[in-house]
Image 1: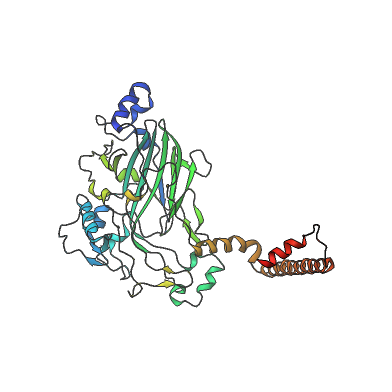
Image 2: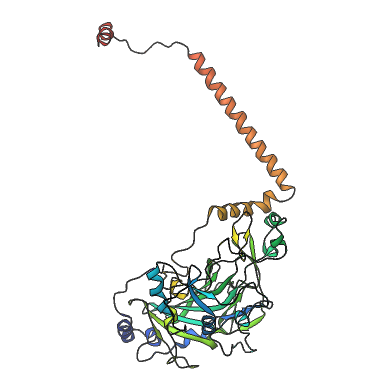
Length: 434
């Protein structure tokens, strides 16, 4: 759930008062000037899509038009309206009535090949622009008159998880007898995928950037050497299939044992095909469309951003023939689709979401094992480590035995000891009478 913060004055009142005393507030959006600040556009991320990723950024409306709202994988009979970006939030009341979350369920089977074209999204042209699609949403959140967080959300209709080639050794050997895994089955796939970057600004200057990655992410200071830039704009590498965002190309390990691959395949400039909004944190999550020099905000929809359900299928039950389970780790072939921008902690206090995920016992165990594997458990090292552990254990056992024997000897040597005080006989007699 998004954390709530209370601000002492309304957004536009703060802007008006700050404008009289500081020059920095004059560039922030106001009702009279509902235009995206130029500095937000100047420092907006540039995304490099992986050269072999078939699943590109997708149009939001096209995605919705190819889904059916369902609860527990059953169509909602009470909702007969044709879905679009202007009425998607109407599903919230339906889900509330059923005390269940609504899922936008694909009208096409995700295992029937070839997959429909809408799941593959759109490829940007040489300039980085995606035509005939809006796959990006930019939301500006003013934390104080001097501080603003700019969220850049990227949407893909399909997320393809990893396969056996993306599992580090020696854990990959655990699946050698699983035919589906060995045949290249991907796990963690889901319909719909929301990723994002967030850039923090103070006095119109960027100070930090956050990269979403699977269930967590990474944050960097703006001048961190890990953050590469082009014409002052930060570079983002979208991982093959999963679309996790990274600050550099190459291989990246996530969840301690899985690999994401990034390269500079296709340049995508998200702000060339995006909706822009300002979030008023003092209100009950109210979004105001913002105009850019590229396009007017008069036609920007807002209902889809208030939608609290899932942007893809619910997780298939084990009884569904499409569902498979990876042994040992209970990883599913198909996961549930994600929720939208509203649930991404837009009112966070720092770069990272305020509520970060906790690791399960399995994840914790894998992390410990993989941290020890290179130095202590790999190849001949396991014999040395085993011998060392046996030696340490034997030493502890011998030491404990010696301590116990010495303690017993001392106890026996003590024998009878006279008390340092005398008890009068009449006290003993009195106790005996009692």
